[in-house]
Amino acid sequence: MVPNLDLILAALLYGSFIACVLLVVAFVILITLLLAFSFSTFSIVFLDLYSVYSLLSRYVGSIEANLELGFLLLLCSLMRYAISAAMASKPSVDRLVSQLRVKAQRAMNRVDASLLVHTRRL
Image 1 (cartoon, rainbow, N blue to C red):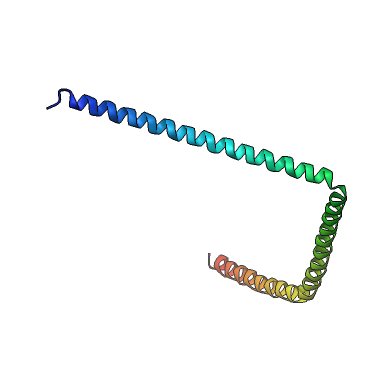
Image 2: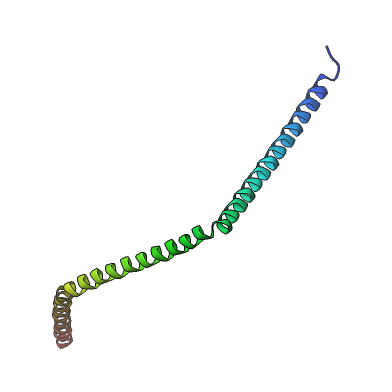
C-alpha cells in the first residue's frame, strides 16, 4: 500500500482541474483573437474595395437612392389604397355609430323611465 495515496490523488485532481481551466481560458483567448483578426481583416478589405472602386461606390449610392425611392412609392400607393378603403367603409361606420347612438338613447330612456317609476313609489 502506498502511503498518503489520498493526498497524491487529491493533488492530481487539483492539478488536472487547474490545467483544464487554463486550457479553457487559453482557448477562449485564441477564439477572441481569431474573431478580432477576421473582423479587422474583412473591414479593411471592404474599406479598400469601397475606396478603390469609386465607380462601384457611385452605383451603390445610386442603388441605395433607388431603393429608398421605391420604398416611398410603395408606401404612397399603400396609403392611397388604405385611404380609399377607409373612405369606402365610412358610410358603414357612420351607420354603425348611428345605430349605437339609437340603442344608447333607448337604454337611457328606459333608465330614466325606471327612475321616474321608482321615485313615484317613494
